[in-house]
Image (tube, rainbow, N blue to C red; front, side, top):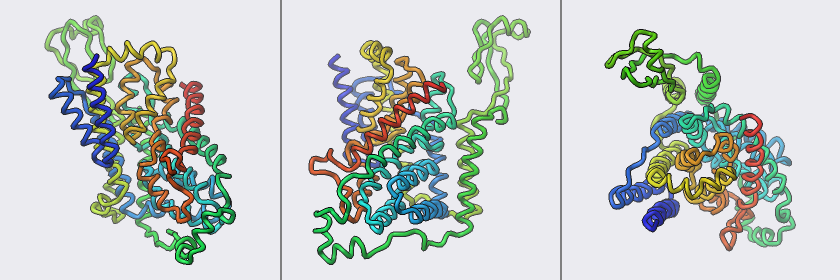
Length: 480
């Protein structure tokens, strides 16, 4: 038992150090922990989640090329026009815009371009920026489980199918989108009266009493509307949306997917496992006249959906490069591609480390947690949330813990219902989107408190996650 505690400490220490250093360190230091468990403690290495990683690479490449084409600027312009046309509704519209942008491109880091505009609209309307900014930052992150090309949604669908919960990406987002949208609107309503109005805020008024500070706050305008969007950039957006649409259609109508022939070896005495996952008994083989050792039979197999997603997304990226003037070097230099690849490395290292530890001690984990989890399935939500606080990656949380949850006997619909709980990294305000939001608020109303935990994102974060989880759980129960 002492050895297991030491190994758990190694896992947690690797996650802690990775989160402290951030970026690529999440995956790299997890790899260090893996090396200690394998070479020093003699644990059998787990299996890295290659299928999930390949899809994420394809999605990140496609979104990165879209950004390089200028198509993402067009999406931000559309959002800005909406915000400036209805400035009095900035508090609900700001999170709605960041929520939708994340759904479209699969990463919350797209909010960096929109957040200065949100602040600018608030200042010119005299609205306290924290009311819109804090919820908008939270919305951009919780929306990750609502995007059909995000790492988290892809991981949930791929892993769930492996464990017998056959759920497609469109089915997942059909549950998570309304749940999370209602959750962030509740948080926006709560935030609508947060703090004093700017004209009544003594601290802010003292700040702008200095002419330099007044010019800093009121003497500039943040906008994307003056940026010219080329026809090629718009064409790239159409290609991107077409790719997402095709993926969604094929996920519902898989009978239209291409098939190929494969060869299945026949033992002659055992059931034959076909690539589709079905088995054929020796008796049926005998009836077909092929019950002999060493015999092979050809079988038609429909291409797997995870391969379809990769092919379509990579093809879309290629079309944007060829026909829309997207430069590959610009795509690689963009924050969408870079943040996505950091997520890939994090998932690779963290999931491999977690798979190794949990795989080695699954029997003990079942003995310790089995009874509690079997009676109270929802307790897995706490595990998701705590793990997310530690590693700042929703995809990594799911790739690491979803196999453990299924092994503990938790039904797939329950795991779908608590999916919003994989967003817990608002709890400690060290994630880049939160830090950027604090820095972009020129009025200083969005802040990290003296005691760290009393920051601007805590309350809207909890409201969004709790409300979204309750609604998501109810919908998952009704439909699955």
